[in-house]
Image (cartoon, rainbow, N blue to C red; front, side, top):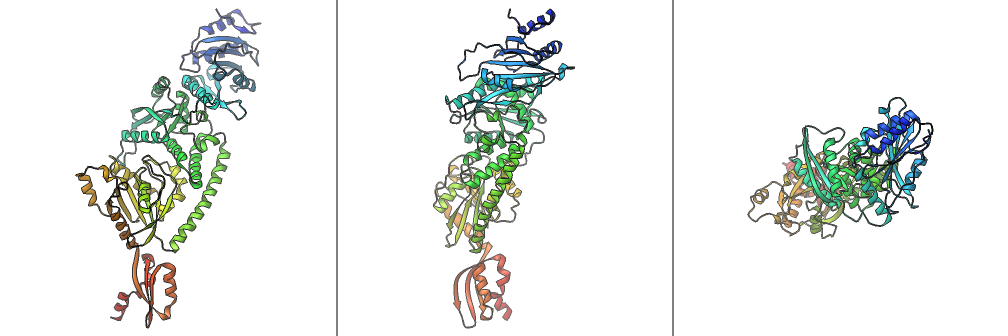
Length: 613
């Protein structure tokens, strides 16, 4: 039988027998530690007032028991046959008499030196062992000097520690070590993901989306981010669980599946609270993100311009701020990957104060960029150049339409959020009128409010546009629901009473005798087109011109020579096409916005004739 090592002097035989029984304890291989083992060690520690250390292997078997004094305990050498670039396969569990679960510098040094799977410290409560807490640290990778970096978990009770799914945590750590060592490249490999959706009472179903539809769209988002979706899980509950969202039992089921299939990532279709995300992540032992985190990650990949990068970082930091403290295992620090790009890779070590400072700095930078954008916008307004803004659900074909109409070559691809940065190009209408066509970021159902706030300056192009082109992918089975989602975002932006042309795109994907196509062709202020096949684009341009005419007046003004200042005003506020000097007045052919018509209405020939009558 294995013997108890260390300082046994002065310990009664009955207590030594209890120490020997620790070798018979077995921790389930899915757990980092068992509540029974923690309480046994705490009880004996209070009796002898000395530290006790225990080695556990990955099967949960006790390999060694050692007794120290009331301050320290010697750690026996381990027979580590694993390679230098792997963890030892052993976790070290030891007690601290007096109640402190804080890991010492010696504990952390031993973790690095011996490459333990985890270093666990039990702060033994002196009067009530049930109140004893434990904390643990894990290796997370290498720093720039080649030294191991660590992450320390906040103190938890033994029952909470039991819920941590340890095999997945160890697998994640070893993948991270392999990435940092150059053995593999996790960032270039596609991460294996599972998706989780839930239907519950009180869900927002006003836009017509079913939970299954939303989960399918989540799969498209995951594909766009670069993940390989292995399986989708769906559950029905009366209401979300406040601690684990889908319930602790379902989380444990997911943890087992993740272990069997070597899953890297779990994505939830709903927004998780910081506490829910932390609890699920610790219980599963793998990285966990929600829908908002996934969309932010895609935006971080897509941003190219300086303004776009600033806006994405602002949204990420605002999302991260309530999650940065008490993050537990901080699994998002391990090895990069989906949900950790952009600001997440380099800013997770910042505390709340530093993040707030960074948010304030970024907002100031965005305000400066906004000032430049406002100057350009004022210049176009002064020159009376009409602006047209493309809006629509992501992947509706807005960028393709802009390319075809303006003979441009901006990036366009059949994927969600293929383009992010706003792009403006000159568009010449059939009546030779010059306009500016702007492509904006695509919308999506439940667009994260952090993004709406961060992209406010970009979306001002939509707010200030003369005409909106609402592009709809009519070939999508949920095109009506997608349209409703766009209108909901427009309502959030407080865009009302603005001319909107509905552009039903991708009609080339519909059957020739489609009843839907016939019905849509008769819709008011709408046109059915195919940007890719160049179908009906001439009709779209004519419709744009008609809508712009409703915003302006093209007519001749007869201004007496006694009021020549009004001629200069016309030049300032409108576009003068032709100017002719008559016997008693100046005839000015001009195009002017209807909002200025009260100033010049009396110079119209029809009005003047009415006055003569």
